[in-house]
Length: 272
Image (cartoon, rainbow, N blue to C red; front, side, top):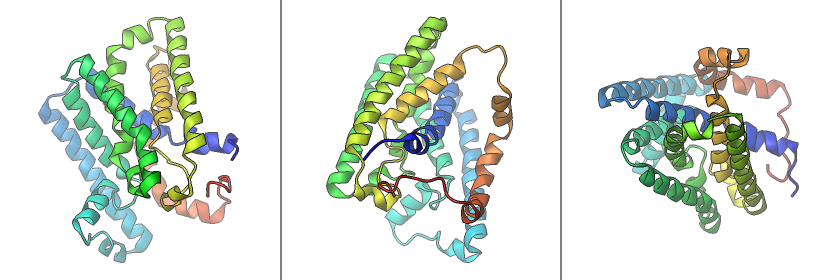
């Protein structure tokens, strides 16, 4: 198998949008630590988003009969239905809620314990694909599994606490970003040489989509660049800050229509 530009786009630049958003959200919780009533209100709003848009998308896709498919047949089905938002894109909100809770809890602990938690969670992310390959338990690396995002709350807390050192000046920012990119590239090399397995085809491509350490480092680079005090945010950033939520919840409704009428961006045959 040979890594190419399509792989860089489909498995690094596109998927990193989810980790980057989670990092930003957790960073804001760490930097403006809310009290429990405020956080509870935020979690309630996210819960309403998950429930409303999951039901609406199910009806849009399968009619009212789609609502019957939401009814779980076992406790495990119930857990999967909740965590995956019934297999829809809105699993992101469920994982976001869990990440915010972890951030809320660990932001009150010392930096030492956050380093311990980050290292432990990165180790788990590193070994879970290998465990999934050995016993074919691909649910461990499913795109909706919250374990994909376990490291991001701790990374966000540490980025906040080392913020002044990391972006003290342009040189510090560049060195920090290059160091994180180098670490991410090293892990990406390992992932592409060890994780391309047919066992993962159950979840889609023959490669873990989000259960990858390299995405943590790439997401951290994006956050560092975003935290740099730019004179003015680019127009694209200003647009996305206003309309990103609407684009996210609505794109799921129109994506099938687009895919039916235009050729899909090609993934390598070896991965499909």
